[in-house]
Structure formats: structure tokens, C-alpha cells
Length: 500
Image (tube, helix red, strand yellow):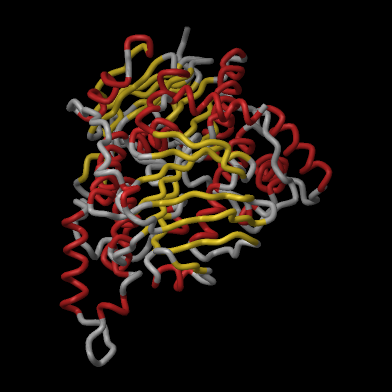
């Protein structure tokens, strides 16, 4: 069988930095080929070269369907059946779900008239292909990140795809949605549609891939049949070292102290109802559940973004009702949002400015002006304490890897000296080594006495890094587990049972 896509001797240099060096890659019709590697390994550059948005250095050869292509542009790749879903989704927040899904097909038709029934039909057909339901009339900017991910995936299915490239497509999806997506990928395989699947979630890689290509520091480590790999071997190939997971050992039983945060029958119509739990100093409590279970909405209510309709919140034993983010911060709450790119960071601003954004008042001098010495001391302290790898604190935060961006978000909130830290999807879209490092930071914060609410779709993540785990379903707390005495299967069975 002739490969649908073949790349030989592909290199790419940027201002003295080697992004790729003499990489060979091929994918056959109908093959599911996973591309893995740490952030900075060259995955994104290789994808951009395939899609025609970046040209390789001289000496490379690219063949599509047996034809050598030279200087291909993005539109040429699209015409040859190559579609790509980037991690940043590239959606229009001011357009509806239907408009975003149907946009590519409408533009390709070159029609001067927009027929809304046609838009709806295209969108519904695309949604049906991956078995999801989205509010077609809703503005994309007003739906959740997970739903935005589904919109981007649906859009790719509106054209004649021969090769679909998915860059972290499941980063914000629940298990049920991931299952539906992977089923679609396998259905595409039966129709000889090839898929390049990029993911940091190794269980998904091993589950869906025919072959796996590993990149490290711009070099190709090798291409392997998925049956020859497991989590440990794949991690070693990606990092060049053995990463050993150490089970979480909680500090002394936190229940001997008074709870720092207590929620009693908290409710908000349409989002969550009668939620109750306690959070103690030095404790990590996990929160998981399907999309729409109310996890993020509960976190936003605790942080003062939304006001609950009823119930009671106690902070250090006294009733509180935070009516703003600023009020929650002043009382000792911090919140790391699930979407660090738009909610957690000012991407075009310097690393240092992002770190100090939450503590500017404490860095002023007697004249109420920012004290440059205090500012620099604070920046350097958090860069050192969280081991943020950055060429300069003046570098825009958008130039950092995903793992280092997440460390900057953590630094910003830890700098406020919170008593409670809410982490919503803290390891979404970061590589395996960075994920382990973030987990170590979270554990260390708990050992220092910080109370942490850890929200994640990844059941192994919450089980391995928490004292207790709460499972939410349709706004209710459906169950509670002691993490050390619970398996992934136990939690998944509860979620699946509730979803029936």
C-alpha cells in the first residue's frame, strides 16, 4: 500500500533554534497514527508543515497521494483532503455553533447568499457523525470549553476528509465524549480516512493507534506498532528517562482540625443542587463527573463569580457570601481556571507581569507606586520556587510551553497566600513530565497546609493525588470516596450507573 502522506528529511530551524531535524514520517490510507512527545519536541512544527502553513528547510520531500508537492500552501492541503483541528480551536466566539461548524463549507461554496436552513443542516449532519448534541443557536463564546472543542471537531467533518489531524482533541472532553470521538475515528478508518492523533493522554494513544511516532527535542526517536508499547515504555521514549510515579501520602489526618471551607446544601438553579462538603487545611479533595455535572459552576460560585440561590458557605467557621472575585481573593481563595489561555493568563504580556497581576497592591511603596525592587524580588521568588523555565521574565508568557504556562498561573495565585486553592483541570493539554511536576507542586502545597479542591475529568489523576474524591452528576454529589481505598473502576462504575 502506498502511503497517503510521506515526508522525508524534514528539518526546520528558527533563528538558530532547531525545531525539527531530518525527520521522516508516513501515514497510510485509513491508518490511525499517533504523534507523541513532550512540549517542544517538534510535534506542532511537523503538523504545520503537513498542513502547508509552514515550509520546511530545503532538502525535504513531501508526497501526498504519491505526488511530490513543492511550496504547498494551506489551501492546497485542504484541497487534497487534509484537515486539521488545532489545540487553540480557531473558532469565532461571536458566531453561533451552527455558523462555526458550517463556515468552511460555506466559504468553499463561494456562495454570496447565506441560507440558514443549509447552515443548520450541515451542522446537524456533522454532529450526527460524532454522536453529539450542541445548541446550534448559542454563541460559541458563551458555551463551555469542552463544547467548543466539539464544535471544532464537527467542523472538520463537513468536508471531504482524507487525512484528519487532531491536536489534543480530547483535552477538555469527558470519558463519554472521548469514547464517542474515538469511535468516529475508527469508523473513518473503515472508510480509508487516515488520522494523525496528537495526545498527551497515553491511555488514549495506546487504545486507538495502529502505530506511534515519538519525537524528542526535534528528532524522531522512532515509529512503533502500538502493541509493542505500554505507558512506561512510551514515557521513557518521550522523556529519555524513567519517570516513576510515587503514590500520594497525605499529611496527618486533616479532620483533626476545623474545616477551612464548608459548603452546606449549596444550590444554583440549572447548575447544581444541595451540594455539601468540607475541606480541611492540608487536604486535597478531588471533584469529578461528566460534562454538565456542575463542577466548574460550583467552583465559580465558591469564587464569587456567580451567586448561589440557596445554601450556606462557611469560611474558617463563619458564614460568607462572596459577591465578587476580589472579595473571595481578600478572604483567602484562589482559583486556577480550566482555560489558562483565555482565563488564566494575559498571553502577550511578560511572565513577570502575569505572576504579579494578583498582588500589585502588596508591591506598592509608601507613595502608592509600584516598588521595582519588591516586584523583581516577588517575580524571582516564584520563578525559582515553581521552577518556571523561562529565558527571561520579560518574555511573553505565550512563548512558554504549556507546562510552564500552567506554573505561571499557579504562581500568580499562590503568591496571594490563599487558604483555599481551587484547581480546575490543572494539567489539561500538558505533557507527561510536566503533569508529574504539577502534581508534585500540588502535593507540596497541601503539605504546607493549603486546602485544595482539585477538579479533573481524569479519574486516575484525582485518585492518585487526593485524600477524598467527590463525584458530581447533573448538579448533585452522587458519591464520595476515600481515594486510597478506591479504584478507577469503582468511580467509573458510579459515573456510568448515574448516566444510564
